[in-house]
Length: 185
Image (cartoon, rainbow, N blue to C red; front, side):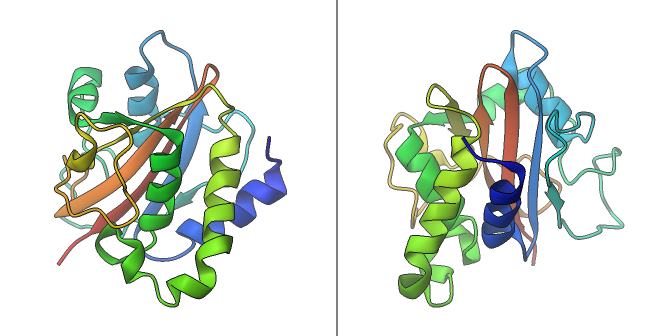
């Protein structure tokens, strides 16, 4: 399991620039989608008080009505927009979110940075424990929990106010985390 300093370092390594969002909240409901909704709509605070990121650009036309980059989707809409993936696919996706159009190929000097980026991804996911479940809006994962998400050629079920977004929801027995990147022309 990670600690606050390792968490912050890993989060900043993967999500410290660009249009990104990282936030964790507590599990308070039987339906984790209700907890995920609280996290993405800024209605939950990290139970550990650890570092979060909200580098989504200010959008004067933000149609969410909540100050969040996400629409206030219902738990049912969130569930319908996400596909369950394996830990390995989740590890790849956290790295890919750093790249242009959510592809590791779009990360400058990726081959030199690969080991450090993957170490940060594993550090982040370790917070949620070995029994965690992971979900993404990358349609490549629909029906394929082991999809290669390092350089996906896919569509996204957008959950935000922006033209495109891609992300990961991590779910443990005690916490829900949202890790997201956004794109707008």
